[in-house]
Each structure stands twice: as structure tokens, then as C-alpha cells.
Image (tube, rainbow, N blue to C red; front, side, top):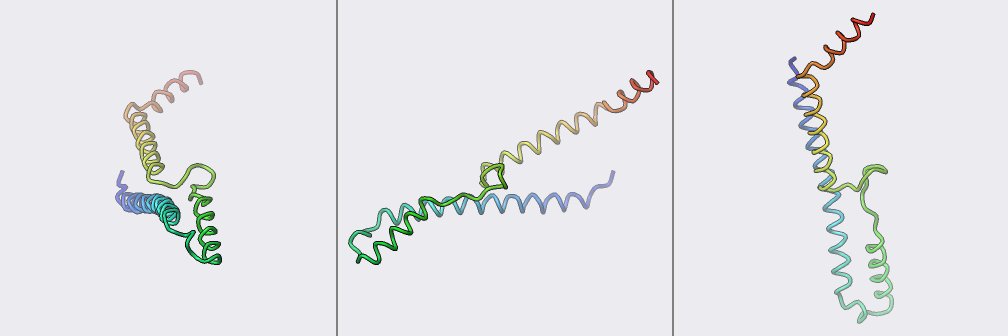
Amino acid sequence: ENWIPGYGVATVLFGEMLFYCLVGTKTTITNERLCYIIGQSNWYTYDIHSQKIVLLLLHSCMNARELWIGPLAPLSVFTGTQIIKSIYSYYTILMEVMNTNVFGKMEKCFSTYS
């Protein structure tokens, strides 16, 4: 009944998840901004060596990979929101099952057959 230490652990894990989601979103936004800035620069007026370097940078930022949660989903604030919604849904279902005492009714049902 007393699960107070679990609240601290849950809070820390929740904060860590949000931090990683923010890092993923920030990385994506920064990469898009870098592509825009490189594309808007006057790179074609540079010397040939610098043009090749800028084009290489532009190519690499246009083909950058997102951060992913394993093979499941991209690591972003949107994904974090979806995870929080699903955790809340599972929590409410679990609390509903525990409050209606479904397991006690199942025990009575099975005990009548044995």
C-alpha cells in the first residue's frame, strides 16, 4: 500500500524520457535550420575548394538521420506525448480493473467449477 519511493523513481524516469524527447526534437530542428542557412548562403561565390566543402555539408545535412527509439518510432516530443497518453490509458484501465475487483469475481467463478 505504501509506494512512496516509487513516486521518486517514476518522476526521475519521466523527466529522463522528456529530456531525451526534447533532445531528439532539438536535433531535428537544428539540422533543418542548418540546411536552410547553408542553402541561403552565397556559397556559389566562394572558391572551388570551399564550394565543395559547403556542398558536402549541404548534402550531409539533407540526408541526416533522425534519432529513433530502437526500430519503433522517431525520438521527438510528439512521440513522448503519445507515450504519456498510452501510459495514462493503461493506468486508467488497470485502476478500473482493480476497483471493480474483476479478479475476485473470477476466483469465485472458478471455485464453483472445482
